[in-house]
Length: 83
Ligand SMILES: [Zn+2]
Image (cartoon, rainbow, N blue to C red; front, side):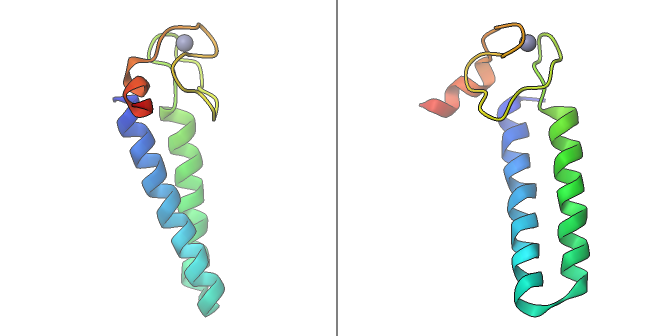
């Protein structure tokens, strides 16, 4: 999968999680606490399994932009982001 797509999906899950927790805080709704927790776990799992260098397979850090911190390979997918 394209790293840009991975990033978009990660932000989507993160946004849904933040929204769920916000609703949970505002309404004292247990359902949204559970939903927010599930989304957090999905986010961590997705991040850990998909947010990896396509060349060496190492996990990419949070601030990774144009180059893999592990093998130094250029990450073409992410480059377009900085336009
Ligand atoms: Zn790498």
